[in-house]
Length: 319
Image 1 (cartoon, rainbow, N blue to C red):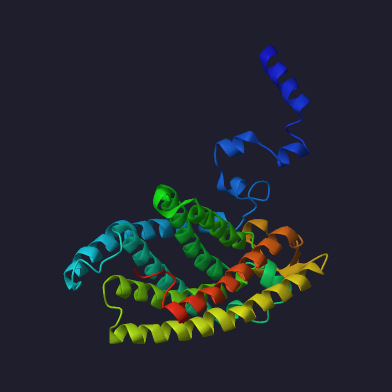
Image 2 (tube, rainbow, N blue to C red; image 1 turned 135 degrees about the vertical axis):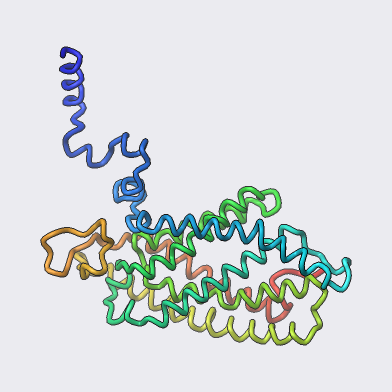
């Protein structure tokens, strides 16, 4: 009894049962409760626990493509190469390109799915576009996040091959994508996923070049699709998306007390007693600038890459 009383006095001194416990409870972190780890008190990604299984499954899928599907395709297509000499691509780079093709196809399909359902973003206010949540859109984001989890692990394991610059790029990409789970600019996911459409043709062009088919007619057809889709979906529509996203962020920042319909609130953050509308936290300015700046930087990179594709035929030199 004395020991229990001493412990009780100790916890009262630490005041663990008061407001301070709302900000830190070691047991929650030791148990790795997703609602705590990804909640407002830690990583502040409240939508992620709802879709974490899909993120994990997506990462496993891309790992299977890399370790099972790509090697099988290598062996199946090896006999079709005209000779071993023109094959200037390592097994690892081949596997990465196959994963990139799979990721581009899946992202494009998800983008078309989100674009075909206009009700997902119909009549949304700028505040809802920037701070709003939507289940189906977040599912698409989870699939994309799974790829970047795989990409991060792959670049770390093969850092001697890829270099630390590529590993840093993977970290930044995963960080930028994960902001959608706050949510932040979640409704622009479909527009940015459409940037992957030209990469389908770009990766096919690389495979054709590296297998000695640079002067074939179907490489010329593929190149036409590459240049047209890149100019339309990556550059033209990309510029419009960047502009709209920046405009909505400015309008959202001007609202000191943003209110969203309850259907746009992440379920764990829903409060009781609201008549269809709930006030949310203001837009995190620093994170918004980082996200918008990252997308603008990638967009400007797109113009540079397009010039290299147009003038030299690819982003890499073909030896």
